[in-house]
Image (cartoon, rainbow, N blue to C red):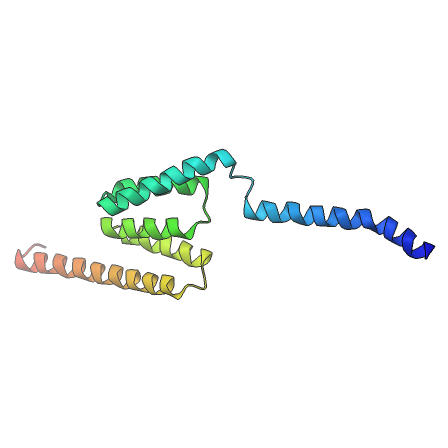
Length: 145
């Protein structure tokens, strides 16, 4: 009985330390040290302003606000999705594709992100073909060498 009591007495402080250590590590994963509580207010303001501008058709302003939000916190997939949508509307297909790729790394189980990426890549290829055709047509029509 005394051996068991003695062992429990010796190992009990270690178990408390290990639990405290695990909580500390988990809290760092949930709330990275680079993000402070004061930044969340600014982050939320940028996200809300970006959403308002996206809904109102001010796509460049939306991209600017999403960029500001991503400087504060880079692990929110919704921001990459909304910035990709804004870049798509602006015709910045390469940037939209990059945002979709980042979104897929953040949310790999969401199949719709991969479908969006495939659609954007196909749209970019079609856009390039159209530009090449238009340039070729212009050169042939106006007989430019």
